[in-house]
Amino acid sequence: MSTITYTATGRRKEAVAKVKLQPGAGALIVNEKSGELYFQYNSEYLNQLRAPLTTLGLATDYDIHVTASGGGVKGQADAVKLAVARAVCQMASEKRAVLKPEGYLTRDYRSKERKKYGLKKARRAPQFSKR
Image 1 (cartoon, rainbow, N blue to C red):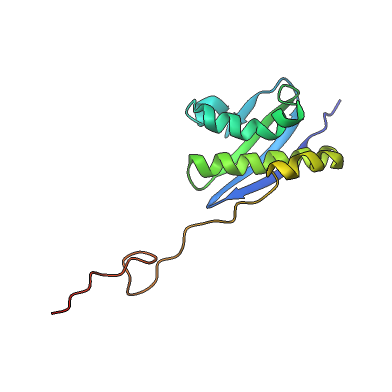
Image 2: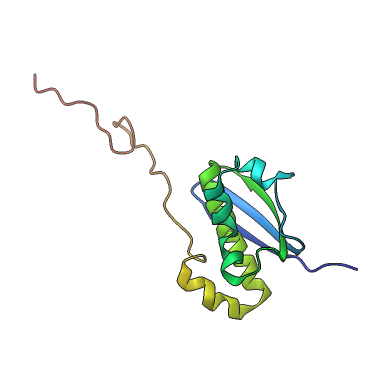
């Protein structure tokens, strides 16, 4: 018997998260590790990436399997949140109406600005000397 899986991808800054949602007991596995261990037992990150499921009351109904790469822990947590929300929308399109106003389906497009020539960083100019 094959279980139905819902897959989606989320991105934030340089982080990319590929998520598989499967019916289960609410387990979180990130890169073959426990989610709590991977996200350093930070309750803010763990609550944030489960937020779309919690909003719909499905937090203990689905297992989340994540492959995350790039960026930092915060960016990866945001990427997982977006991917989970997108996967939930694949289950049933009427759930989109609940997730959209909460902001779970909005991609945070902000990323690091590139360094320009003649500058020390993206905008930081060398110190000006009058004489």
